[in-house]
Amino acid sequence: MNPIRLDKFISERTEYSRSQIKQLVSRKAVTVDGQIVKTSDIKINPETAKVTVNGNEIRTERYRYILLNKPDGYVCSTTDNDGESVMKLVPDNLRTKNMFPAGRLDKDSLGALLITDDGELAHRILSPKKHISKIYIVKLDRPFKNNYVNLFKNGLELASGEVCLPAEVRGCKMSEKLAFIQLFEGKYHQIKRMFSAVGNHVDVLMRVSLGNLILPEKLAFGECMELLHKDVENLFLTPDFDGFCHDFTGIFSAKLINK
Ligand code: URA
Image (cartoon, rainbow, N blue to C red; front, side, top):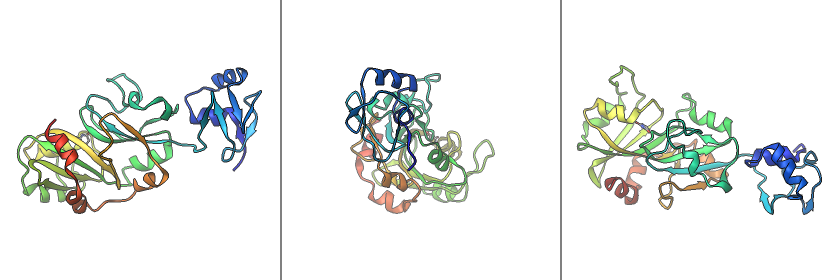
């Protein structure tokens, strides 16, 4: 690994700007391998140097991957222009400067949202060509009908005339008004428009998996967790949908029923 400048290393991994880092250095708040540094332009090995700022160690990994269990009422953007941003829910100790939500859930939708500063990975996830699996659980206004299964599988036509890619949908044994749906694309308000096309209505929508990364039940609405490298690789795997529906435990379903 090529050496990089200390200020670049810190700036890429934190919310500090380069000028703030300069000030921190002049206040003797930055150490490298246990030694207080005098200037911020020294070169370090980003893989082996132990860097601290105000006594807190800066991690070596270049990018951060955060899984948020999105609550109702937050918008998937980096600004508060259209409502409170999901970024407000990322704790300071997990946040870096260039983070953004890699994907969209409607303001009233819930569940798994990836937040990262890895633009390349986000691009791979969001690319329409990649067909990443996403599984949602929905609470419907009217009971689920079995004819939805074939209608969704055959590529549903929306009221706008847009045709959806084949999708999987199953009723949930816990309630006739709950259903699971697996999509491989992400059109605007897609699930709401799909159920509207079959004469139903989505009351509550929650994303429960991104690829084979399943939202942990212990993660409450509004909570974040940092993902490990192996979790990130799971994003590109496709879970078996029927197995997923079968194994799905009641906690999220109960949360949705009670919404
Ligand atoms: N489909 C929708 O209608 N809304 C979402 O938030 C996600 C998928």
